[in-house]
Length: 274
Image 1 (cartoon, helix red, strand yellow):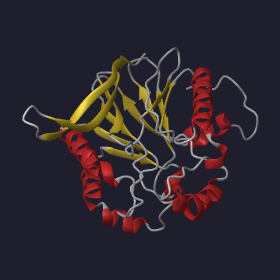
Image 2: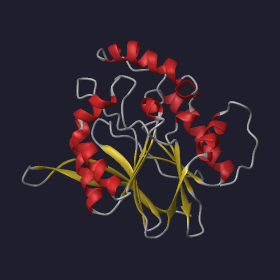
Image 3: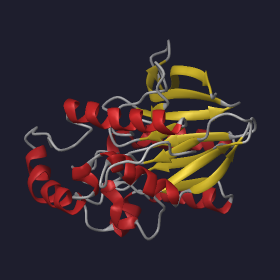
């Protein structure tokens, strides 16, 4: 990864560069089996816990990836610590998830970074990861993505205050937070443009979350997004196998006998890593 341009102070590109300067490095080769997940927003199990409605899908997917030898990457906002104050209560409400994490940790098959909604875990988690391409192609840099969002990075404490004491109560009445990239289309486009420009300057892939909008590289862009686990009808993620990227969705489906099951659907791909 080589920086080809000097950015102005306090720019989103500088915040991304700073995060990646302290990244954990991992190998990427034809034997790698990685799953990238982001924005689970695990809560305390109450009415505001947006993770609850997809918990069964998430657990089915997690069990699948554990059984099939994948290494799990979580790109931030795993815990919802803006609406909730206590990590211990989140862990207690989702013991099955953290039990699986312990299993993966013992096998060195889990790597997590923090996002703006679990910034309080900064001392426990890193901010970025880089997959070093051992096959001669481009590296894959991974961040949460809030670095491209001034209000949710530099002013994150103010954002947390507004979410916790203003937008959270209004959420019960269907009012969305306009400062959120996941709920503001214009903000999302601005966010994605920043990440697109960064990939062009550095000529490497950049994987993120934050916007909750899943995508793979297309039209000359090297930016990809894992989406989230709080979509209304499923969860999304990006699989890396055989030096290829595949965007997948886990959802409920129906068999001919009308019984329900959890299905893995390929949305886009596989797309080769160049």
